[in-house]
Image 1 (spheres, helix red, strand yellow):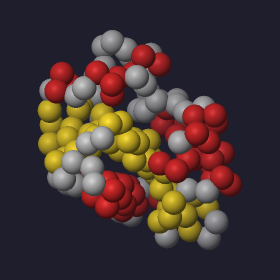
Image 2: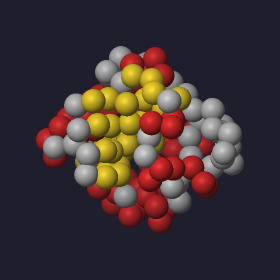
Image 3: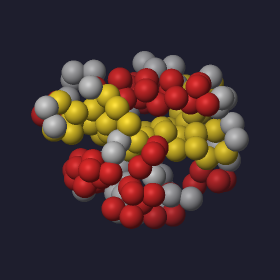
Image 4: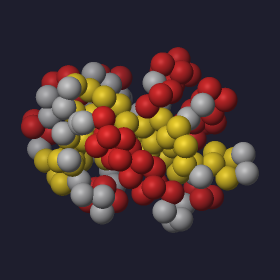
Length: 149
């Protein structure tokens, strides 16, 4: 069941994200960051176990980022990541956003949801705030993708 994240989910979200961050697949998020951005997150849970998470982070009046998309390795290949991304896209449409971007190592996954590859230079400078925290900065090897709504 996909739902908006709740306070009780924060530590489980962090644990899930850290699994991927420790491998360099995504940025880690502190508990403080997760509590501050809790309303951005969707989660999927089954019988009280958090299986996946994704966030829609508003950047500007017409732009948001889908970020922190993670699914437990035990729950992979069941469509959970896709449902989480679709929840973010649906919310973006509901609130009137015009574009969503992502930075990803999985361009094929996001392409299935309508995102297209773009040059990172097409993204406004404002989106790079989190990148400064990344150990790979400024030599980012992620793919930039955009979805026009």
